[in-house]
Length: 634
Ligand code: M6R
Image (cartoon, rainbow, N blue to C red; front, side):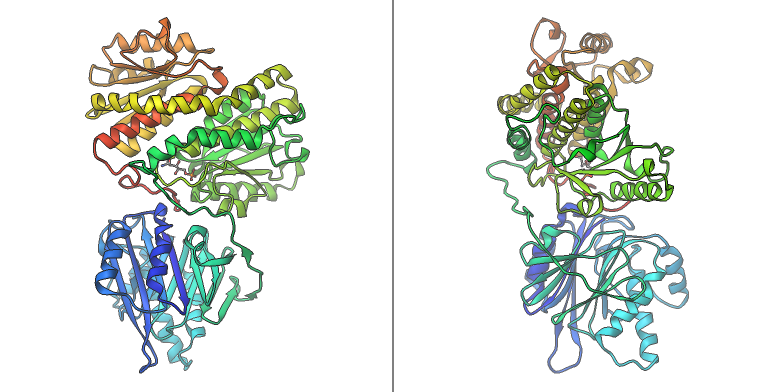
């Protein structure tokens, strides 16, 4: 995981790198570093400055202020630790033994141990525990050989050395390399990890993701798998894996919202929770305009062929997106009547179910960059293409909050959830946006397939139209209620979340939110499953949050809550006010809506309760320990 950025041009590289890295911190914030090369007029080569700091980017910025990092050529990195602890010695860039070559990398070099052993046997001394460090040493070796072959030092020499090293690396990488002996050359390469070249004014850049380029480049050239490029102030040379020169036109960089403003909120997460009524409003305005035909009650950017003949849906996702997918599967199956299965993308990659015909595969990822989801989609497309029978051909949809992400470059159909930039690592408003996407798909499928009456479909669309206003008052009320409750539960060690049916995934999401930002152990269970084991965990110190929304399982959930109460658990209910819900010790009231749309409301108290508990504990809510907003390694 990690984010990389690189630049070569006519202005100072360090400020550009820092600004670029700021937009990549969502990919990791364990450490950050940069290397710049300053051309020395008196000599042929440059002078390399390498600065690295443990922790967030702010530490690196302070280091640059103190020491300076001159030069127009530079590479930068923000790290999420995979190999080696988040210490300065493991921070990127990594250098060869002479300190003349510097490399930043995103991805994992799977054969790094074998490569390291060979290099160590040849006398190379390693200074870090990372997989990356083998790369500068291997490049140094190739450069040495090229010099022995009599090649004069030139930019092409660095390119050739990198091209010789890349086939030796197994695994995924996006990397950027610089060398003091070629102070105007940058070599970049990618395999199974994203990398985009940005064309600026008088400079060329390269980064893991578009927001890092948005301030400097008007056009971008996304690199394809296996490509390597030489960037100099004069231009770009792009080569494929075979070494053939590639010519492609860059595309306009548009639609990147990179302005992160906390407004007056204490944390981005709180701001984003409060933005949910707006997310809902935008969705309703865009997708539920009046006067749509009965067979397409929701305006989605797909024609008839998209819906035609689908017999099964498979959804691939991770984390919170997977929880939204579970709600989606409930709607697609129970409302629209399409058999739907949800998979952890990381499991699907290596244990996919046997191929089924006429299947729509949905990749659900708010960032559009999650490595497992992208790889699972690619694997599924490949096995379907290889099948030969057209009934098994890939039909893929990506649902994302980032329509300019890697996902959008990979799958043919994209549904933009349009929730706006989400900065907090804990997904909140994008979860809501994902739920809306599934309401849209399920209503359209149900209408086309005739699995629901016009009246039922009309009634749900009307209910959806009133969600923004209802959410407005709900968010305000729960912000206050949850803050009060948080004081009581801030020192709790374990919490159980219960839900059933369409609200079971909300119990999972409640538990995940609490775990990731407050570091309190929490588990989500289907309420009826408690008595099969987990009920043994209950005692007066383990609060149970029970989601009881009126509908087919309402009474069942209340009975399950009673069972917990009988074991002295403290009960927090997420339910409408009324005589039925008097059993709860604390009630987080939600409006009495149809069960179909209830997750849009029941999730709000989950988010706010977790937020306030974490904030009360004084934790780094927006950038919790060990996490990253986007998980770009397997
Ligand atoms: O960008 P994605 O939706 O693919 O991200 C998936 C998960 O990494 C993400 O939902 C993660 O679980 C969040 N930290 C949840 O708040």
